[in-house]
Length: 164
Image (cartoon, rainbow, N blue to C red; front, side, top):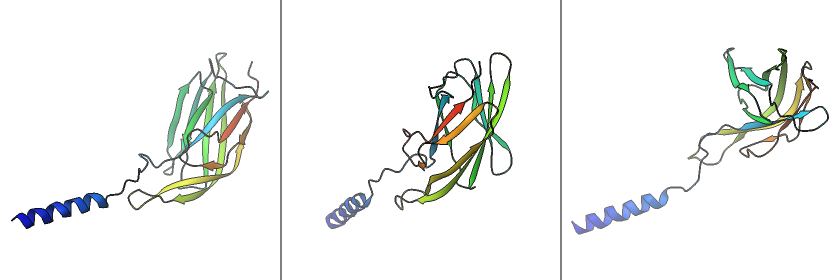
């Protein structure tokens, strides 16, 4: 009986030692960071204007990613790994009653990222191009093309036209 207890105890110790200590990310989504600028290059704070961002998902329905945000200088959007181009619709409403709609198209390469057998597959991305309509947006520029788990990197600079 004593040998059985010792064997079970040793087996338990071996099993516990075999577990990995890899920290898998809680979510394996990656986000792109968009910073807002005025056409003169200064930071644009949407102090009174509201910004809503919508995208079309794979099944064709619309999904709201940012809803009537105000007082922001940046925002984060997740990026898909099911299509080579993401399309975002920006709706800006100002206090004068003007409503603007612009579209941003982001092309990218999806790069499978594998950390461990214990972690699920995730995708990093390399941004290849960005284009936009020009109703209220002056331009959108890629400032860092590599999208991974680092949430402190500015990926895009959005330059607004003068509104007032």
